[in-house]
Amino acid sequence: MLGTPRYILLFLVSFTAALAATTGSGSVTYHDYQALPLELLKYNPPFCGMPYTSLDVTRITAVAGMTTDQCGTCLKVTNSANPSKFVYVLAVDKCMNALDISKPAFAQILDIDAGHGDVSWTPVDKSLCAGVYPAGGI
Image 1: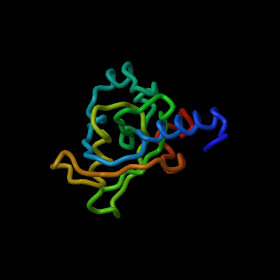
Image 2 (image 1 turned 60 degrees about the vertical axis):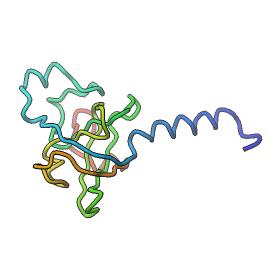
Image 3 (image 1 turned 90 degrees about the horizontal axis):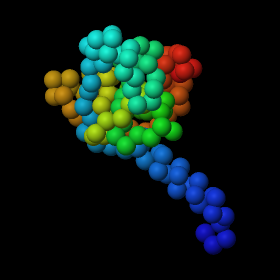
């Protein structure tokens, strides 16, 4: 990389860091957003600032280590033991461990009674999350 301009190196480092939180594998849990009281959803937006009341809360996720530039990333979450089971969710919040996906999305790929499971996730085209956040064009 001798002679590579510093701004290119800085871009590559920044891009790699930004992608890191939205690509990975680990143990996922679920969050029952649908069971939260409407008033709580209305006045307590997630990390990304999108009002819960404007989101299809059946298709959202929190991501550990997420930054603001990763808000609105569409993720393909795949069951590690059965790759034919996957779901597309929109990253809207931060969490402590790996992913915390909506309960209905979790139930599509894992055993809801177990409460957790191993998955991998990767960013995909936003069109795969169409309808999750109509107010934001997603």
